[in-house]
Length: 342
Image 1 (cartoon, rainbow, N blue to C red):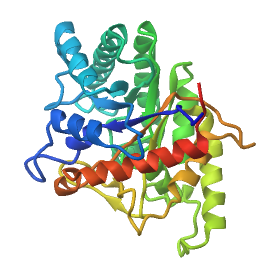
Image 2 (spheres, rainbow, N blue to C red):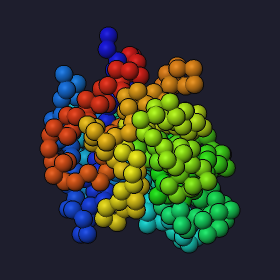
Image 3 (cartoon, rainbow, N blue to C red):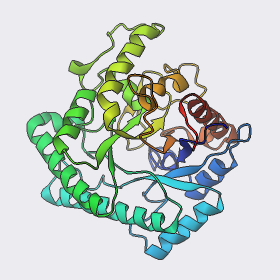
Image 4 (tube, one colour):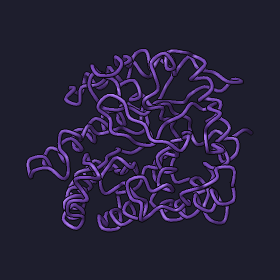
């Protein structure tokens, strides 16, 4: 029997992130759902979507009836829901006391949203994704105080999430203070010290950890690194994944060409490349194994689904059905190599 886990998801928020008045118009949620549902590769389809609880796609203050209607709409496309992104950026952890209260309240609202989806039956796995909502520049003004504020806020958010039986996954991305280096990320998670905090690994973002863009002191690859030297790259990937894999509870499959990119209001971070990009530095299906298997090569089965995140792709790329077919094909490759059957 072919592998049926992990389930294969597409993210909806690339229709919003990096879009806007100073970039390109957002792509409606219905269009993202339609193109996800239409993708097919050798009889394989997407199993579901991960949702960004963000305007203009979704109102975080939706009533329970509105959330159920959304669930019915998604189910109508033959899709499930997995992880949810809490809209915490109006409450930066390194802002005011009021900002931090807003952060925790947004996590509570996201957890309630997830509870309604669970009770509906459309969401059987997944986590609530968070980040520090603050920049590395802010963090670096006073690293010790910054760490203290992030940890305090994350602990409060974890306590709220626990009331809903939810886990929080902090996104490892170089544009978030306290998350901008693999060593600092581990340090932050250890300090939070809650059973329901974990790490969200995105293969595009975590590759940038090896290059030390916003934390040169934690760079792993040499400055004149020759990308054709797979042995050095693989050793670097092993170092980062050995440190962060024990924390990883949510996973994005992605490609990166070794550069940073930002559009609209989004700060520069790891560039998400197309699954077929010839400049991609990762052997995506093989390198996903560093996250999906432990140091002895055994499957961790630490999460029930994997997701493709294609943030900041141009709209003309995202509106082509072939784009989503190619992405699905790459996810199927990952599942063929590192999946299991239940």
